Amino acid sequence: MVALVGGIAVTGALAQNVCDDLDGATAKYEAFTANYQKKDVAGKEAALAAGKEFLEKWGACESWAEQVKFVKPWIGRLETQVAALKEEAVLGPLFTRYDAAINSDNADELYSAGKAILEKQPDNINIIYPMAVIGPREIAKGNNKYNAESLRYAKMLYDKLKSNVVFTRKLKTGEESIGVLKYEKTRPEAMSELTYTLAYVNFYGQKNMKAGIPYYYEATQLPGFFKTYPAVYASIGDYYVAEAAPIGAEIAKLIEAIKAAPTDEEKAKIDEQVKAKVALFNGYTERAMDAYGRAWSYAKSDTPALKTYKDKLMAVVQDLYKRRFDKDAGVNEWVATAVAKPLPDPTSAVQPVIDEPTTTTTSAAPSGTGVGAANGTGVAGKPAGAAPTKPVVAKKP
Image (cartoon, rainbow, N blue to C red; front, side, top):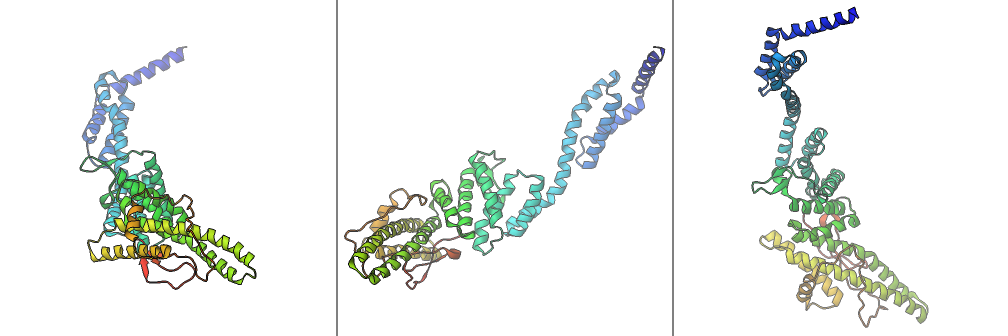
């Protein structure tokens, strides 16, 4: 008991001695107040160290209660500020590199600096956005090495925007935005461009038309630049032609089989197969005409290059129309009627179109034309292996 009481007495005496250490407490408190408002890391770290020691030694002293009350809330603030300054010291040069890469259209540097930033700020959607949407531009330049990353980032943001992710930036107009510099977009613009990116990179970069076509259709249904972008509709036309090509080849083989059939009964059986294939081929041809017709209707002709593109689109439509209906007259009226209706969903089943009467036991393949999508340049030609005509640009980057 004597020992315990003695210990308490000693502890109380020590505490009293610390509280009486006026010079020590004053020095630490003044070291804190001299540094806590400094802008550099060293100054703030000095304040943080002094403040913590002051609270540890004199935090329980009634004579320093007012100073303790002032210092205590600053500890958390200083810790946050020091961490932010240290991060800025690392990120500042990276942001400078990133901005320079955007201004110089340097994809290699954009991805290098961008990935380094995302290691520190993995949820920075403003950094992710340009990395997502440069895919189509790079593909148009013949650079396919960022296809997978462009798709990954584009899908990431596409899903986030669908979930109404909070934007952290605003334009001068006050409207919320995403991205930086020339890639800064409003929410509707960003959703349109991300959808287009997913379409384009899949369709042309990855050569996966089926993966890209739903996004192309979605882009036509969203507000934004790509809703009326001619190349979107031309690419949908490319898809129909590519899907119809195997049908045309099958028809050509069946026609040869009819000619080789030994009996009229066998010829008639094959002829029924041809009729069904021709009807389906007609359906694809009309879908393609619809898509290219819309591309032509949206295309501008303000410059020689734009006029050339618009004229080529009409040439494709005219060729399709001629081969489908075996006439030239009425193509403009057909296009006007088609585009006045809602765009057919290219992921929906194409319905056969039957012409009556239909005679297929001839040596000719059915009417039709196509615009391929290899490297963005299509080739118009008959479906059954006929010689192609002049190249037609089916899409623009």
